[in-house]
Image (cartoon, rainbow, N blue to C red; front, side):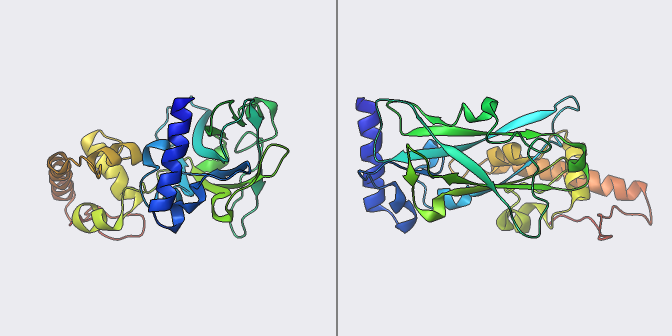
Length: 261
């Protein structure tokens, strides 16, 4: 219980001392529910907004992987309860995209195997929301979009509007990791393309996915020496490829030459 009180107190102090984005974590006496950043990022300004839109790909998984789970952090504002409290989610249709189909692209939120996990445990104010994605063959040719909202029930009122939803774009194709940011694009990677991404993977034996790139670019403990080493290996491999294919240098899917800064 002391840990719970400390956590709630920390959230309240954070809300008082930080910008408006963190204000929704201020303690109140009504049980409300909203999404938030991971516990490890609770003090990082902008973390909640950054986590609202996420991407995932099955591309790096073994061929026999038929489903995978992506987790989202959710918080009960108003303090812990002496009993478990269930909550509910619903899909929201997004205009102009290929909306995920329950049973085809993901396991529906009202499926008992999923909904049984939508619980804030007694004495807790935080939980992880599992979203179970299915590796449908259609993801080889088209991305799917799953946007979902918290809906009010007997246990929770709705929290701040900006924190009631999450969106997940997923595919079974190679995709641009969020870590391939504008800064690193300018200094290390250059313009993104799937051909370039695949060439980096083949040249180094690394996936160059979000997890791998996040380690190299960790804001607390970055590893520029290791990143520089890998880029040297990649650039050397590109020179060797182009020399081995005179008049047919490596080009991306749009016909542009593959180059690095």
